[in-house]
Image (cartoon, rainbow, N blue to C red):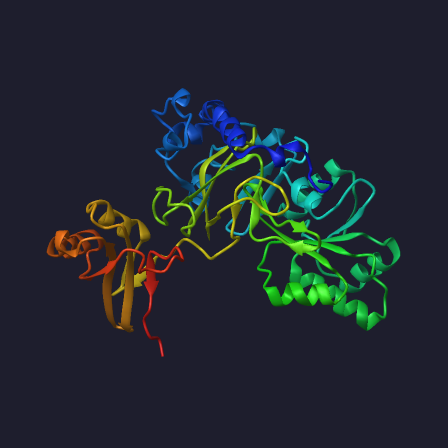
Length: 415
């Protein structure tokens, strides 16, 4: 199809899986040449990592770990295989967290979502991601260069100049946050400026509720697609269209391995269950192995109507860090996982914190097949042993708990 970037997007899924897994040993070996990964992957034989089962035995390194890792080994936590002084750009996000960009073509793999939007050589894009310290604008620059698109480096703010640039330079597409595009459209109306050349928009970095997408479409931008990425990985997944209709879910990038794991653990969940997005990236300068994004999503079954055969995810579904304070003590998802791990009778569990402030009630709801086989008293004792807090137990039938990825639910009344 004309909006495919290359033939990789239409590969047989099994062929793609085999190709990615075949690259794993080399990726792990390359990562181990960096001191940070050498420590994280200490004792791992790279040649043994040839399957998803083997990959799932490796530790998850989470985005929330980066600040401490980078403080211990500036600037990139010992996780890069290219020296900082040999990188193209060095970025700083709030935290601070530092991210690199190397010299490779389309380093952030941003051309795929841009191609899915219909962008091609000769098109002009107005890039309204920030050029200040953070990498989003440069992600779009890399994708545009690969496709052969001219870029208006607009950045954020200066709304009247944004409108003037659109009116005079006639870009074909907008790239940036959806809320800023709405502001530009409203300013153009106020200025009575013609920005009708902008028929396409690739948006990200914030939520795109259906109501906002419809508003943008109803106000002159019929093709609005969102992508999902991060400053560490770049493009992760992106929306596609068929006959002008947005297809369900987001298609995973071709150069990544996706796992959805139970929050607080590194354990993959069954397909369709909500969990934390964990990515393995084959970036030669900044390899990431089982990198926990902290974002929640789930795999959609089947292949996208657009014909791309890669895995689809539902998109961003919240944050995985559900750490909750109960009676002045923090309870972590990993502690819930520790309780579950000790009792194979528990298929799934959810810790519900209820009651009113200063009168917390903690109950572990467990899905089980046979309540009679469950050592309830022992589980209650384990809850106290692991969390240092008293908790009750409630047994429920398999399939009873919501599929929303929550391991800890704060149901307290704060009013």
